[in-house]
Amino acid sequence: MRPGFVLDIGCGIGRNLGHLNGHGVGVDHNPTSVAACVSAGLTAFSPDDFEQSRYAASDTFDTVLLAHVIEHMTEAEAHDLISTYLAYLRPGGRVILITPQERGQASDSTHVRFVDHAAVHGLAHQLGLNVVALRSFPLPRVAGRVFTYNETVAELA
Image (cartoon, rainbow, N blue to C red; front, side, top):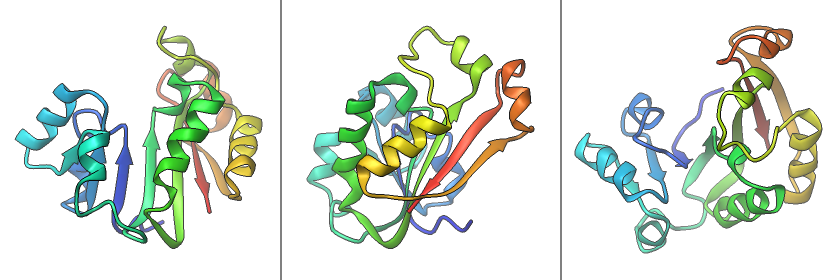
């Protein structure tokens, strides 16, 4: 997959933005995280500041990325968050969700819910999107039971 221009929702301190070589914009509710991104030369905003930025325009982004975000919220909150940013996605664009598998889910007390394949399909349906791909990374799915850093990567369109 070629991500194109990426909107990284819940960008944190810019771990993913840093790999995009200027082809991405981050949004995070934590002002300290946004400040860390900006001081590293990355483009990042609070949600309110993003809405006032030149990037908050229809059809701006090829990809909306939520990496390790939706497991920290209820299904309704995840739906509302993603819905907020879908208008900025270009036609044919993708929403990428990255979530921990079982061992990773259990490793963080701030996780609200486990996002399994059924949850991904349900969320996609609620958003009017289809699941284009659902992968386990970096190891096969069974490894998620014992390997903390195994992730589910979902591509929605």
